Length: 199
Ligand code: C5P
Ligand code: MG
Picture 1 (cartoon, helix red, strand yellow):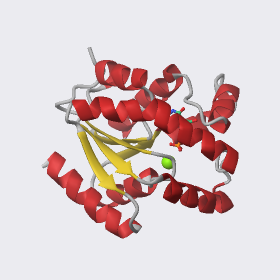
Picture 2: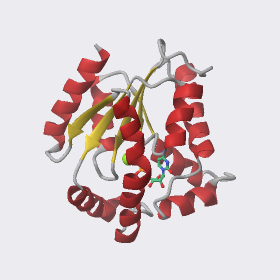
Picture 3: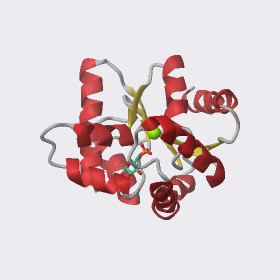
């Protein structure tokens, strides 16, 4: 049994390689719709920084290496954040960004937390993503926005996260948007895709 009933709680997964623009596009969607945006990466970074966190050191090393943090950690953070949003922010519509990044996360979330409605896949060539990440590194302060970590994150995306997208493609749950264009142009397509799915 899942924790949340998918007829009452809407979950959209937002996937794409590092630097594809997941966070940016989710930010735009939040301005226009009553979505609660949960970024798995942001939740992990917050947990890493939380004083007394047992998983802090583990998260730090996995993020720097561009590896997927053990799923129980991320699933727990997401479940708690959803509980909190439903209870205190009276919301039932979620954009979950950067998750699932590994097959076990996909299977476990859909079965035990909430069956997702669809996947918004932001497709972007590696060269564009690298350019964006290097630009972001000037201001992000992120441990993993450096050439070495970026290369590892790309490898993890191809080897570990693409199979998740393929899994959902087989189920006909993926809407793909090309993300090479400007933020506004990409957003116009994202909005169109979302409207079509939730109408
Ligand atoms: O999505 P974002 O780029 O913020 O993720 C940063 C890092 O957080 C990933 O490279 C990975 O190390 C970790 N992460 C994870 N599992 C997820 C999402 C992010 O391990 N589902
Ligand atoms: Mg992000």
